[in-house]
Amino acid sequence: MKFGIEFVPNEPIYKLEYLVRLAEDVGFDYVWITDHYNNKDVYQTLAILAESTSTIKLGPGVTNPYVRNPAITAASIATLDDLSGGRATLGIGPGDKATFDALGIEWTKPVSTIRSAVDTFRTLLGGDKTASGAQLGGVKAAQEKVPIYQGAQGPKMLETAGEIADGVLINASNPKDYGAAIPLIEKGAKSAGKSLADIDVGAYTATSIAKDSAKAANAAKIVVAFIAAGSPPPVFERHGLPGDTGAKFGGFLAKGDFGGAIGAVNDELLDAFSVVGTPDEFIPKIKALEEGGVTQFVAGSPIGPNKEDSIKLLGKVISSY
Ligand SMILES: C[C@H](OP(=O)(O)OC[C@@H](O)[C@@H](O)[C@@H](O)Cn1c2nc(=O)[nH]c(=O)c-2cc2ccc(O)cc21)C(=O)N[C@@H](CCC(=O)N[C@@H](CCC(=O)O)C(=O)O)C(=O)O
Image (tube, rainbow, N blue to C red; front, side, top):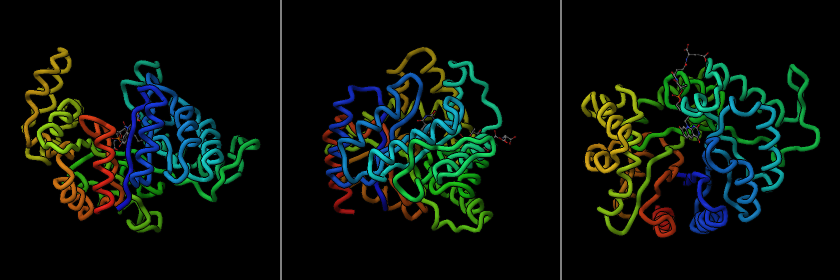
């Protein structure tokens, strides 16, 4: 099992730099930096992280092909790869509606747009010219092939990821979600003459680890409330949750009733939408994901009540895994 960690670049860069160096020291293999227009710029953040680390692989987790032209993303990734001595990875997803509404960008044909963007990345990062004549001249990726991961949830996106990407990052924390996703990824891989073994299946989980189980659970509740509010009905069905779960949490959050939302998160919801607990409680949960076909466990927000302590505890999990 590989281990990744996710950070949202919305805190002082020196703090993020410290936490990522700590993650590298305790044994994480990947760091993924989220990309939303209203946070710090993902590539400037990654450049700083590249300078202050030496082994951890790093990249956007995930950017999208709408806010930046794919050729600009390819140049940014080639620059990151150059800066980091060949440690760049590229996480690409269809982006989210809230972003495009706020920026007045039309969100059309996400599957075809991702497909075309990945084709452009592979052409430019490989040093070739696109059909429209774009070519990277002043910057070249350090490594032969920058791995491209696709952020995906929907069935078509999952199948596309299996077909065209080297890895997939799935916003899900429970083995039941991978039971549904993996056959689609495998179908896509096979359609491209690959096998599931060629795809790094990343579980982009809502993680919260602490020495005290209850404190770990409490730190995850608000994140679980947002995930529940944004999940489609088939997900609730898969987890045996009431069909109105999304509307219930959507209602709390729309009113700004975060206390009500947190109070309504029970153990069933925590189990469905997060990985929480003490280090000893974490190991069997990661094992269950691995048995379900996950090959990279990504510790996503909130990570725990105290990020620094939780990264150290995750280091214990990694070293004993
Ligand atoms: C578009 C959407 O795909 P999805 O994979 O479910 O998208 C949900 C999320 O993955 C997407 O919003 C991501 O960008 C969210 N996301 C992030 N989004 C961000 O904006 N920033 C981030 O940092 C970020 C991180 C992240 C990490 C992991 C992860 O899994 C997702 C992450 C969807 O609806 N897909 C459906 C329908 C696809 C569709 O629209 N099909 C049409 C059009 C087909 C065509 O495009 O040609 C059709 O069939 O006609 C499907 O896959 O079946």
